[in-house]
Length: 82
Image 1 (cartoon, rainbow, N blue to C red):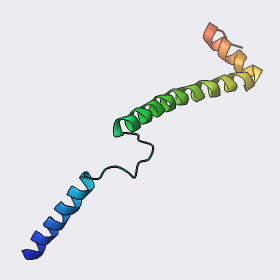
Image 2 (image 1 turned 120 degrees about the horizontal axis):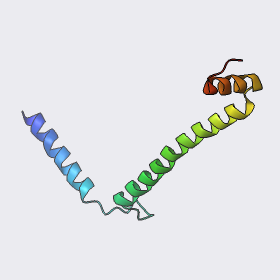
Image 3 (image 1 turned 180 degrees about the vertical axis):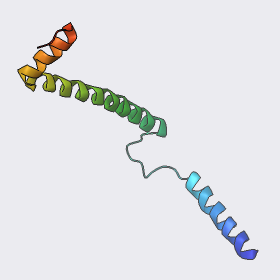
């Protein structure tokens, strides 16, 4: 029981000192909210970048596909056969 009490006391003291630190280790001065804001902006850019890549790949696939495949798609779209 004494070891558990000593452990809890030491953890409490260490936690209190960590929360009371002045923050001198952060020379840029960025707060937690600024970090979250930048991370949120990065996520927005990432999630806009992924659909752009998918559209670009589809465009390349359409450009480099064979002409017979294009004719077959057009025939299927029009309801005719080759």
